[in-house]
Length: 511
Image (cartoon, rainbow, N blue to C red; front, side):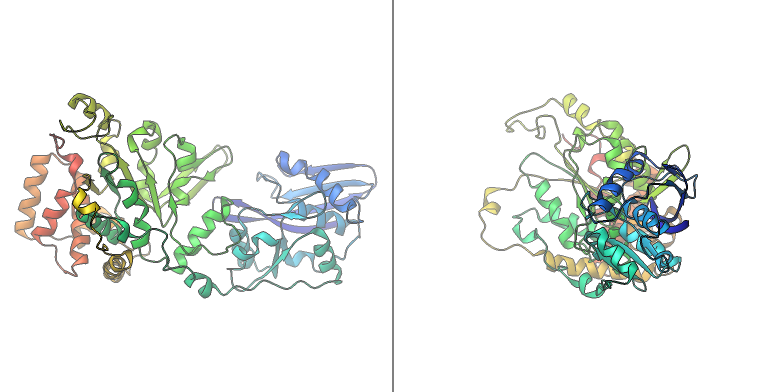
């Protein structure tokens, strides 16, 4: 008897429906075709044990299973449940009338229990697009998949529940989630708050500008000056995610298997990889490409602490994703694109000893050593960072001050207002929501300068020997500063402030 059941394969952040054809005939054998990997080939042992422990069995006949499309590589143990249901249906151990209406996915334990899978949200979205009645998944994945409206999502704990469901012995209740309620949960309770930071008013101003325009920022300063503390508080002043952003972010984390039983991700991600990270772990890849840290930071913040300690080739692979806001991973037979629209926040010491060229510093490095240390970061990478700011140690008077500093919620109000201005300005563009995303063509349109500002920028360009990319960055940052003041036009003092935030472009800035 021939039976078809449906599963799903995830490539990048999109799912593809897989038709599993099970044919049982005279003879003996178990043949699995359609480019399955080792984990799928091993499924026969898990299925046999799971069925036996639930009083069902593999038929002692010739079982042929084809996973179509047969030229597409299938990977992982998530097809266990699909194959098990197909075998039971083809051997007439369960009814087959409802099987083709559902996408069925899950990894089997030997006792018949189900383990969580990756990419449940993408699978549910594709199932809805293709007109399936519902999706049957492990109970641990049900919340993320139930975010999709218009399709029944059933969470099951073991294979017996699935068998009883198709035999009509036991009904399953679809999981329903109020997306808006999930979305509004925990929006205003940041773990870290700017009110904890003593002093550093100029750095807080930079952070506010970076958050308002989505700009990349690098903090340069000696140990203990508060670089990491400030970076960790940046997500607390970013605008809350829109529903679209929350879905995009959840989809990537779902594919990577990072979504717990929380369902929709409502907090902007904050990723902080160690400086020993490889280029594959940072940008994604592998023989079967998975999203890297830059994609997991999509719509959030990627914090690279001690930037010069990262391997140079690791940092260089970030150039293209920083510019294009997506990363394309190519293999011989397929190409996968992951979104990577993140805010880069980097921090670094100015020298190997950790201090500026200061005779009072505990450890001093020669100017040559400092220059060699800084040269570990290439000019093209620095060009892609909009704001460079020096962080100086906080004086004792500020540290011992008992007055409460401005809270994150107060700063966030101003950031939200500036972002709203940008949203209104760019509402006709599909993929542009804030100033950092402006292309060169749009910069010319929205960052028009008067004669005084133009002359000021020309002088700065000539004296600091700035690149064309740095010129664009200054215009974007000045546009954001103007938006924070709700100013329609960019003024000369906006340009002057933006030029100040190009520290690493100035020769001898350590002197």
